[in-house]
Amino acid sequence: MPDLEQWPTGRLLTTAARLVEHAWNERLVDIGVTHAGVIALGVLANEGAMTQASLAQIVRVQAQTMGKTLSRLESRGHVTRVRNDLDRRSHMVSISPAGQQVLEASEDIERTLVAGGGLVSEELRDHLKTVIRELGAPRWNYTAAGAASGEGAAADGSDTGPAATVSS
Image (cartoon, rainbow, N blue to C red; front, side, top):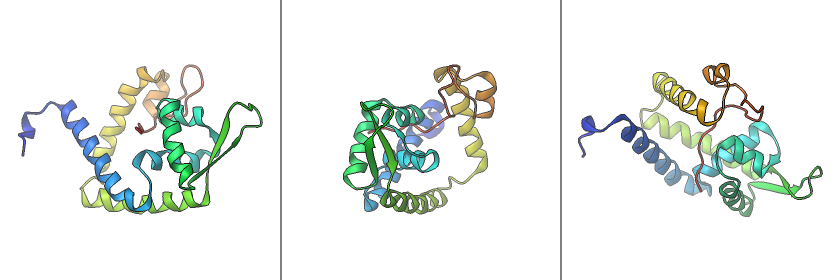
């Protein structure tokens, strides 16, 4: 085991994030979805149908990265894409009933994962939210009030608050 006491905080944080994502994906494989897919499904369940570009913006990834995630979800029947009536060049993406079931199953997996790994501390959650707010504010152009609350709009009005990062 490496000497974690000697590691800088940034290394601890990135290593922990990778380990959590790997643990998630190992458990999610049984229900046919990745951690990135769960994040996309969660946003669609909470926010409703939207374009791929809007979903990518909320989740803080490139539209192309989101496209790969959505293609996997669509091939498994977890999302549907229909032509956008307002802009025929784009599609509206929505969660399907099968996607809703997968999302519910993933919530059970999360409860098991975080309970078993000691990740239920409100203090830890508060620290992580602080990191996201402080580092996300300049990166995502939050207003100062929005960054403090975690719910603020971007300077251009396009943001809906901090979101998790998704990789393909």
